[in-house]
Image 1: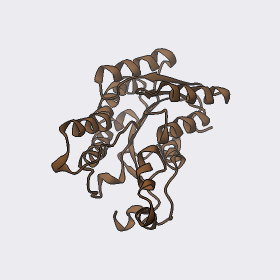
Image 2 (image 1 turned 90 degrees about the vertical axis):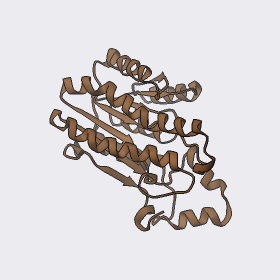
Image 3 (image 1 turned 45 degrees about the horizontal axis):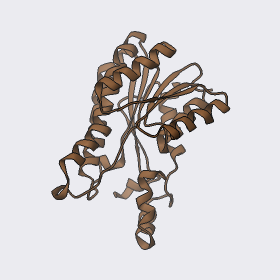
Image 4 (image 1 turned 60 degrees about the vertical axis):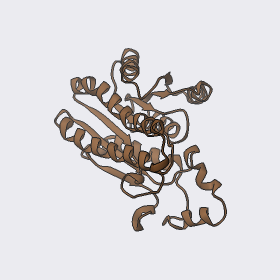
Amino acid sequence: MKLANKIALVTGGSRGIGKSVVETLAREGAKVAFVYHSKAEAANAVVAEQAALGREVFAIQGDVSDNASADSIVQQVIEKWSRIDILVNNAGIIKDGLLMAMDPADWHAVINTNLTSVYNFCHAVMRPMISQRSGRIINMSSVAAEYGNQGQVNYAASKGGIQGLTRCLATEVGRRNITVNAVAPGFIETDMTEAVRNMGGDKFKEVVAGISLKRLGKPEDIANAVLFLASDDAAYITGHVLTVDGGLTLGGI
């Protein structure tokens, strides 16, 4: 197993990509803690499913946009397992709308959940990872960070910020054997992209036609990329944004 005896923390781990990341890291031998915001039933289901497979996973409720909450969550993981080897910043939301009509609350909600949370958790794990002189940080970005898409100024700004943070932090902690990378998914089959399917008719067909592999991605496609970056196979990769989009951006969105 690629991650035997490793300790991982995943934000937004109760559904979609995050759930798949939790399952994949646990399958490869890691003990995994994950953060959920409000859906305790879904979080408990993930824990139960993994326990039935003999895997050690536990859920922590918290607000990823709150610095004190992030500090508390990291401390809980360290108290339980003594260390954190892998941090996956996956939590994210969308509140799409044209800028001229966008409520300030929608701007701040997306920036705080998607970007500020990455700062919060990276900051919280810095001292532990520096002390142990090792660590893997993987941040979830998006192809929206580099390719314009109407109605997503808040989302694109948050994901672009994640890429900048990733590259800068990688330069700061590399000498401590800590790698910092990001994954940029394209259209993935999750609750957040259900709206794409709901477009129906020709619109959905146009979206799929623009993807070289002619299908939406699956959460496990992203989870496998995270696994690679978290493993020793990627020990000499840092400051990199790995695009996983089935060829969507080869010709731009």
